[in-house]
Image (cartoon, rainbow, N blue to C red):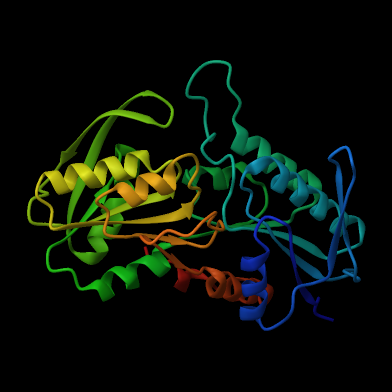
Length: 310
């Protein structure tokens, strides 16, 4: 007998979880979370999961509480005899800690992977990891999806006359090059210098900017300092327009203010993380149909390679 699919939501992004379940064609499973006065919490399933394929939708932002809740939910499903426990993590927190970039620091992404598998997770579904090698931190299957599945059709529909793909930093050059090759466009790379984390001191552009319609690409937008500085610099250098595509809208600190005051035409993000407030320049594309389709294909042992544009 084939196991039943049940989709549950953590408290990280219940709106997205509900959309994924509806796109899959069913309602979210029943969950409850007891909160104690000292700050502890205890999630529990309010329906049987014995022999079921349990999909737990939980983005880990900010990482600590939502991540620990995911661990408890996975452990509860394992102890309730679920056949498999799949962590659907549209946004994978701690992904920026993928290596030791200075002495005596942790590799947070590897620790996160170890904790998830110890808790009973048998598969991971996520989108646009900050570093591709994080997939190798796991000893279980990882379905690493890409927002390019949504972003590329969006760019093509804009029909920009002088399209140029840009990366706001050197680290994103591989992603920008992949988009540029697919769209047969020119490419620009920004070079930045930092004095400390989240603060950009100097920035310059490598490539032709004047008269171009620039599309900046990044996996996440945090304070939006780098992104808006790059956009303003390119407009000052004579670009026709600058818009940005970012998979994960972390948007901390003065991010919303920075975006509103910038010369960005628009910022397109996905709904892997819920927005904290409204912003006239931000457009959201939903990943719910994509994740629902992947859940269906994984459950039915079908190929998912058609969802990878690159």
